[in-house]
Length: 194
Image 1 (cartoon, rainbow, N blue to C red):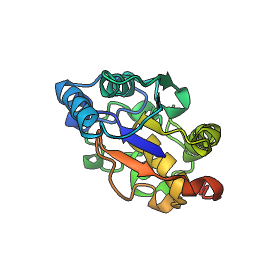
Image 2: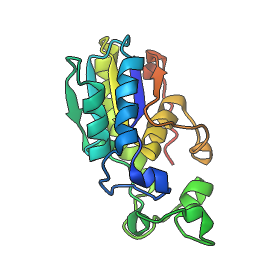
Image 3: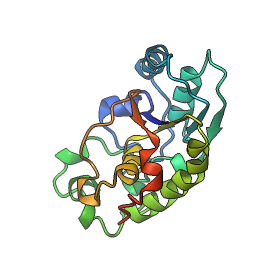
Image 4: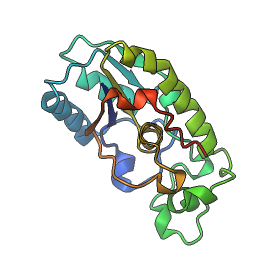
């Protein structure tokens, strides 16, 4: 079984700032959320946790696994999508013609990333590589939890479910809520890579 969870809240989440690769820690609410998730999902059998190398994901994973004997493996492929020079932008949707908004409003039109940003193709390539690497572990019966980020998690889910790029942002990914995926997807070619 594969489980996917987004990190707990941060001050930048509360301010509606684009975080991307900016390494923002959890706030007290985020730590509380991670602890509550640990209790809420305590019945899940998890053999291994993979997480982004960004502190908000690492901290979430460590709080979640604090009273459990679960190894945590940090993987750079699970870092959040880079939003380049727009990281730190507050309430970008309220800024008319802000170039980063295309990424969220019309994913298929986001052909060239903003300065210092990451393309969808790059995001799909690195997260797809991660999924390929864990497939044998899942096939062998291991239960894995991924602790990541909004866009990165959506990319994993898009590949697992075969969701086209135009629908990339459909559905919500709440902080510290676990999404479950049985192993049916392992034998399918669901890769909707742009």
